[in-house]
Image (tube, rainbow, N blue to C red):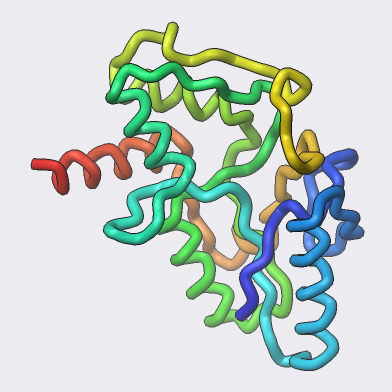
Length: 189
């Protein structure tokens, strides 16, 4: 199993299915697309799983976007979140279940996106409601307002219909964030 990314797409014609043409716009996406090609060439029996932006409780492992958002908001820090960049984020546990499901069905290429195409700002709003913190801590910004080292596609939403038809059931963002916040709270007590 090779784990790839939604960033193999250019963001111009979403949503992207498994048959959509890859056309990355940054080095990370290009390297993943190149790796996918080499995997297919040298290990044709392998499976490729494209994941979107991940969030969720990660135990003692590295932090992810969702955990960082929770920590910042609980500390009263204002978050600058893109309102014009869209993804189909999925919680880490749903993604893991989807990966196991794809093994069961031996799918050569599968997308494991979430149920909703949203911006990071939209995600922040969901989290703000769960944490019951002031909306003023969320600052919606455009990609153009942020100096970035690499070009980022505007909408790399994944079409995960194939995975859904196999039984993949990711949580809604509000459900995934609620579970993540509950787990983080249990650990900090």
